[in-house]
Image (cartoon, rainbow, N blue to C red; front, side):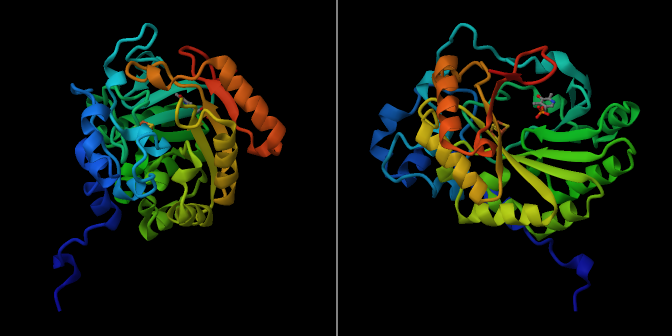
Length: 334
Ligand SMILES: *Cc1c(COP(=O)(O)O)cnc(C)c1O
Ligand code: SF4
């Protein structure tokens, strides 16, 4: 028998699936039967933010539909290249709010850790598409500086792992961080902001489940789905595992023109999320980040949509419509 420590490392399935993601826009269009429309659909110049989408997410897109709401979230578009007044590179003031390597401490009682700059999917509207991750993630520093900051500030009862997508880190890396956080007496809760259980539900594997379930902190997982078609049986299974590991599940969505600026779609998202055991949390007005102006929905329209949702759904299925305003002490309700 070969000793266990000499066996080749098993490739972790979700990491393998991640590596197999689609990164070529022409391949994505070909997979959807849209190859002959590449000239019309793709931007003529580099947008500076590469395409990335797992194949399992592509499989949820409608074949032959260039306006598919999932495709629209990931396909680079010519509209990203135009400069629009008011849309800037650091729309939410992250650069000013940083207090230690990887820590954003803007709100009372909770601090956000930029755990990594990587994501399994590149969302075209993302407010962090211009964030200078390379030098500023907590992981780059093996957590010590970030954890030191959290330990020194006894007002911090909740640590939020964000990014990028914190679940793009290996479970081993997350365990290092979890172990460190568990030694801080005033930290009671760990919150994880992640889109991975939606776009690559295989990420919630047995190793991850075991880590989360054993964590000696209260656990909240805030998912990010924008359209009911993003949630399929694989996502249901991932959510069931997260709940089994003791996590409270919430969803934050971004209001996006041409994706979910429609009362039937938003109601469908709340209903479908709840069927997966997930409560709606925030509906974000778009951060005014350069390259995303074509996704913006006017405030009056956003409010009308949420008013219509309130008439149609039980109160607990109506998300809070908010915007992030640089310098404010919380998200700002509209
Ligand atoms: C959004 C955000 C939070 C979390 O805010 P909640 O209202 O508690 O969800 C915390 N810190 C920062 C820096 C944020 O941007
Ligand atoms: S997963 Fe989140 S952080 Fe990553 S690109 Fe999408 S919106 Fe941005």
